[in-house]
Length: 355
Image 1: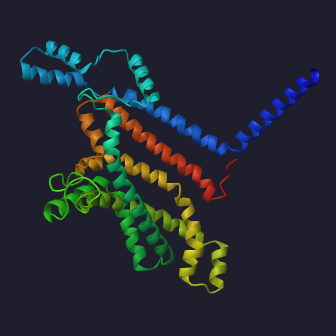
Image 2 (image 1 turned 180 degrees about the vertical axis):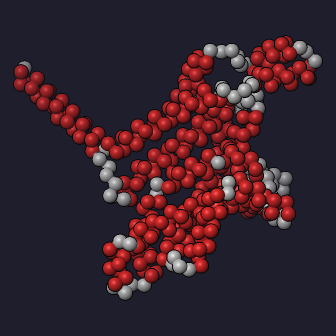
Image 3 (image 1 turned 90 degrees about the vertical axis):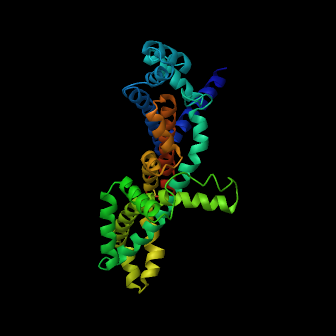
């Protein structure tokens, strides 16, 4: 009996030690996951209370509409609006917060007060693909352009390309992205009439599906939003790639490669590019967040039916439950993307300690 207890005690001690070693060895990953979860929780709390600090409420807007339509008193219209919307503006804020958190755990991000059967979940299914389409295309196009230009000007710092890129970086970094968007709309949509200034495809002359006319229409309507995003983001990639390459060019192994008589192309492709790209991995999460976060303004300018435009319209109409659901989902996506980048980085750069 005593021997059995000792075996159990020994087993538990070994199991506890192994578990502790596992957490210590992988504390980098667990730390990143913990920070992501904490950020997500704080985002949900701040979002709930900040939205309720906006002046006015949805019942008030609907009551004014009923008052004008039916010619009744404001008090009667307000009471009727509360019943029709199934919304109580005087509900205890903590009770409302409890319902909100419970919905998040069930995967229900919020039902619309204005439209029956419409929820944040249903809007995400229809709007998210369009936002992801223009954001992801712009992200990868700007990345490859920035990497190519950045590594070239790093090796030719006294040439015209370096001076031109410096001017472009300064201009793209100082002018707000929405001004780029407005300029593109004015020039390409209204003056030259080359590209459309609104919608995601031609609903009158094309049928949605895997067919050439529809695909061509989607690309044509997405061109200006993608170009606007790309113009802004490319400058950031050039700046960081150029700085990273200049740092790498000062390393001893680059000096040794030059001493061996290797060409600039060989040094750039086999030695410089790989090492210079490593610091840029973490920028993917930041750039994605900037693109996704700026979707509300950019999609409003182009009237592009993504999540950003939907958030903007719902804010105007005080549809709080849908707004907080869409913004929370957007924040969660950005947090998850940054978490994935943080998890991948130690795998591509062994210098980063995972433990």
